[in-house]
Image (cartoon, rainbow, N blue to C red):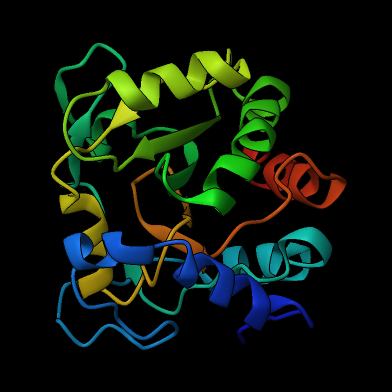
Length: 214
């Protein structure tokens, strides 16, 4: 069952508005919450896993919802911290909170310090925050933003082609920016949301503690 809070519509609207004219670059937005009818979804998330995580999607992360289809994102390709192409499956073996952001997206900029704090507090062998910049062109601008606000714990991931966003949009996983996905150790989507959240909150920490213990 999809969980929402009173501010969830506002959060989604803010995420969509943050696109501005750049929405023309990304393309026509999909409809948030639609089921994937592309035939690309893969089953595999256990009812026990869903039952364990669903009660934790409350408070500051209440806009995140369990994904009915365990979409396999193993083949998503973007640039890793070394600047070389990598696949999402290259980071298999741990749960990941994957966040798509851009320097021109105000809500994205606002939540990046919290994502950095989450990585510092909970990152390790069993969990990682993978924040992927979808700024077009070179990496100079998003890297400069990292330095500007003092992000020292997040790895720098970049997709200048915006192919990751478009792939998620086709699966009804992306409406606007920011986009956040909780992936299991096999790159399958456990839960997702559009819009910002407070990722350095006790609610977020409880969620990550739970998945790290699996």
